[in-house]
Image 1 (cartoon, rainbow, N blue to C red):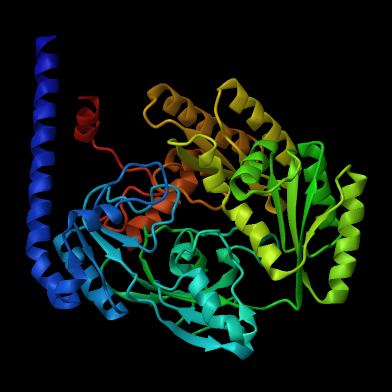
Image 2 (image 1 turned 180 degrees about the vertical axis):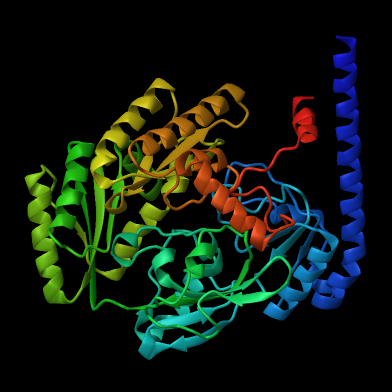
Length: 500
């Protein structure tokens, strides 16, 4: 027994020594790299300030802040390449940062290292109005692009709610309220410029290429869409654009049950109505929105709908949709026709996060999302609401019901460990219910830190091994946003450290 104890203690001492040595060597590497960083970005392009590092070590998730050792602010792809080469030489982790609006801890510097803040790369480079595409740098946000496009008759419709950076949206495979008609980032990214871990540049569809379709080679563009910064830094994105619809109209319809609301959704899609948005809010969520946004909708399961098209096509879409919803015991539509009313309606939907938090002042919110085949959505929502009641949790539900994707916004007291534990168990159970219904553990938030084990359950060991092999090929030293998406390869020493 003494020998076992002695061996265990030796391993702990060894682990502590190695961890301490590793930290010392990393600090030394950062220190030796700083002058080179400054020569690349200038004095103002490198920050060691605590506030700046903390700002770049967290997103909108509940995962704790993990600041990088240093933040750099490159101004062009050449500077990104030069910085990446220094990090590669010094074995320093690289964490790309856009606007910090992620929801799964994707920007935390788990192993320290260098945060590449891309806000200074904010140029809209190539707009081809006649071809309906545009190329942007990573500092350009969704709202910024649409403001730039305002007088062209074009827009970019992928709308996750937050004013996220477009390259960050590509990295996380974002979508949002318009995805039922216009698709997600996966369908709307045509080409990417990516800086790899060793500082080399690739163009996923060929330099300057922007055809509307291609069957040439492997689909590298979609390999990097959703990679969450673990394979490379996206420094340009070529995106599909769409014509601004001639007319838009929004409506709200209340239902006696979740089943009736989802049945209406399925039937609307089956009828071929090219609806632009169809959003579901449960009774708890609609009550929160009523209070927060000064609305007066019935506190029952509710659909927010929006139609795009010509005046004539809108009349047909609306007529068909009204007939379907009323056949499912839906209320008469409450309309929002002019731009101001429509914007107010959708602002209320996008403010659902803040409305949920307002249900329990002083508490925090955690938004988790899953996605299932639409036919399974009513059962999943009903079981989720029952689980919330069983665990005495506050969790309003809102979702992109046309895609089978919904969010549960869990509001909890961060100072109550027991409640925090219940939130964790609930979110795991929700994801596993979705997997049991042939769905996914995340429809649009991504994996980050929070859903790595669930991704393994979803994909299986062989598929995960292929993902690991891709990571090892592109980033053999595991420098690109380490410990995100893929579970870390644990050594015996690090396991002992965790036990101790």
